[in-house]
Image (cartoon, rainbow, N blue to C red; front, side, top):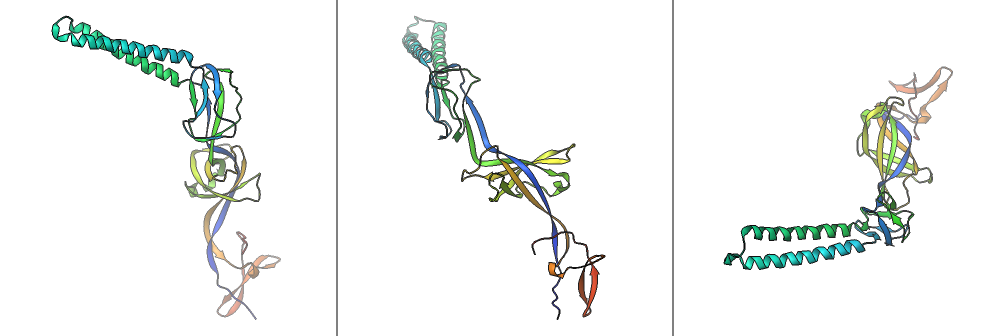
Length: 276
């Protein structure tokens, strides 16, 4: 008794694997815009902050005094201009004197804007949403413009850099699916997508740099982790048969094909094996 099945046709799956390095979607290092002494640190390591959140406050007494001085100067200039404007109709002042008073008021207004700007620069704010890393400074410490106050990492998504051989470049496209296994969590399989593709093939390794993106809303992944990346590309279409149909002889593999109601031995070359 013989069981025969029809031959189907499917594309050969070209699988590419690589080891990639993960990094946070965004990561910034916050520093003070001006040198000064830290009066207060408003956050702790591990906190989640939103853009604009106050991170640290520098001493600002000198800037506050400058702002008060500028406001007093503006009030004085405004009173003088008002007095001269009342005298315009009497002919007691010249137009040049009136212009000088108007210029003095405008200058005082600019000094207030500058003082307010200098005062704002004494506050260090978060430039992005993210998690605060370890903090290496303390209240009372003097910092410069190059000293790191805190690092902020947005790890809502993880970017993965990896390389693929140049033979698959034609099949690469942004948005293409990738399967990812964190090396630290080998039993976990995640699905991501291609985010960006480099434009130049490395001449030494004959590979192309690809950047994938992986959702991390569960916050289980961290920047710097290693990932096993798998991509599948559809190749040429070939006949597909059940593995039980394959027979072996000394000269290689073959199948029995049904032709005109008879079994005919046909040699085959196995190009790829799958589970079924």
